[in-house]
Image (cartoon, rainbow, N blue to C red; front, side, top):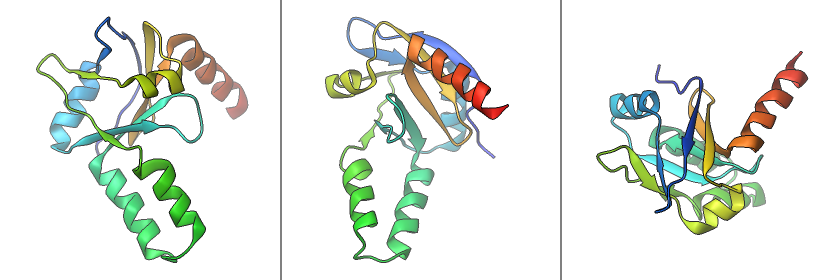
Length: 138
């Protein structure tokens, strides 16, 4: 099973590029899938998913009531803003301004592995999220 694990620090450079951590790049490479980024529906961060997860979500919603508002909201909230990530040879991708604003990304970042996907957070917000999650889990 392909998984994104652990946490890593990174930066948003002056050209609005983020370098994906090498272990995540390795996972992406092994999967041989496209990857997509979108604004999280739960937090002020970005979520990065493999195409297989996106396809599974679409299939789940398509198998349910086609005319439901829930399906329509899903498609509007996620699919309309989904962006394929193109990784350069140094493992970087460009983050559009609207994604930066939504997630409050500044120079310092944290990547948080969540198994089948990973999140990109502004460093202090991400560290706080990890701390709060651990406290709530106890």
